[in-house]
Image 1 (spheres, rainbow, N blue to C red):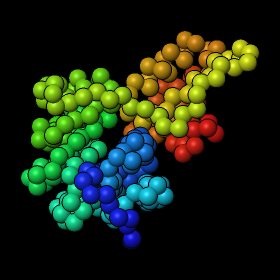
Image 2: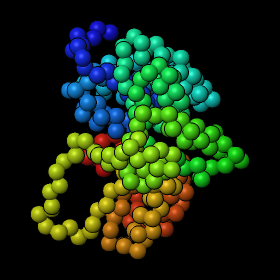
Image 3: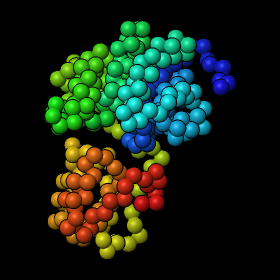
Length: 261
């Protein structure tokens, strides 16, 4: 891959995402890349072809790892641990930005090599949701992230509630709240006339802590409101069961184009 000449003195930032499906973290990275592109030399380490294609189209240098899945999923992180030092040295990276639970393991080699490590927490650690008997692999990933976060240069929390899960681990100077945003969002235009029914669209990963079950409870009490839930996740089946008797709630699943919902 040919790369344009880099300006001398510009900071070099490596964004890392090892997620295998396109969701909130990937949307966040696209927006972050748009914000940073004019001020830093940007590199991305990822496994998802769609994220690679979107970022490459924006002129970002992308290093793609194999998309291991199923029982081979841990190889994503093993491979990333192996190649990260090489990338830091080859591209003379100054700052590493990480997302996800097991990606937090990469904080340690980045810090040992003298790089800044900025970790974005997109949600609480959720340790209380799992046990050694119930999905122990998820419990381990969350415990690893909670331990590794102590070694970061700085943590970005996408909401105040996320910050509450970090404040017990770090002093205030080492974490910040920068609220999540939706890029390319069209300005709100009130309808010319009042619609007969109110339309509510919820876009979320379907996990219990997101609180989508509370929206379903509200819809049950507001039959004049139509609710569309966009997204997927481990809690989807239980949410659909909860909404089975609520006629004004529908599930649209994962959608790449929200304008079509």
